Image 1 (cartoon, rainbow, N blue to C red):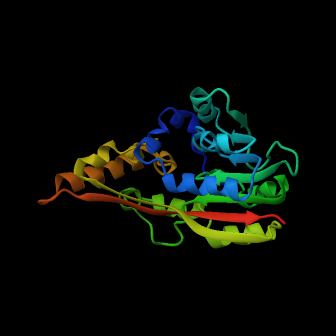
Image 2 (cartoon, one colour):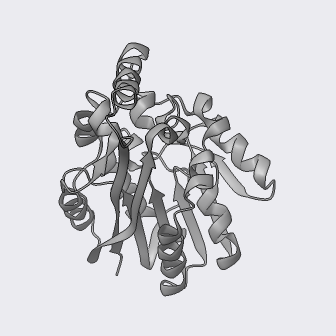
Image 3 (cartoon, helix red, strand yellow):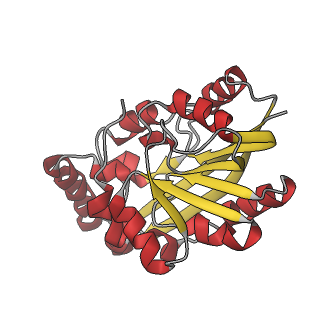
Length: 255
């Protein structure tokens, strides 16, 4: 079982990440999936503050967001009271079988207690011709660079445990009865923070990402001490803190 992040505490500041980077590639990918599948009914599991529910709401007859955190759902409701939102568990989705054309999980799968069971649950909910789409990091590929991995001990090791590889996810989709699968890059995030800019980056804050939220206060303080040491000991040009990530999209279709 994955470690649990207290998203009720994180929720008030969560959307700062989208102010910095709205993730236009993911937006295009999700919109294309709705149109490609002619999806009338869409479910996003792990919808958080409703970023993608709001994005897709005008494109389908019904877009439902489900999240385990009441705090995150409160933030979503505060942005648009008309959103269709529900509290629930990704492994026990409270909907009838064959009730959606598209099920989405965007940067959320690593929080589910049983990721393989979620894929089977999503398959149950899909009508003929429907699709499941999962967007997430895949640290197993080994090409991502992220300053969090460099400065905070244990973060990469934890992510390798929490995030299943793309190959494993595709295998689980096929085992769950999906007839066709697809892998592609949904978003390439490249950001460089020069010197003390890094201190204001939302992802550097203790609750700015699940990676740091899972650390003990002492482990987080140790990582921040390394960042400050890099800033204080810079000889000449300030250090550059790099985020270079490839967010993958894995989709499976039902016959």
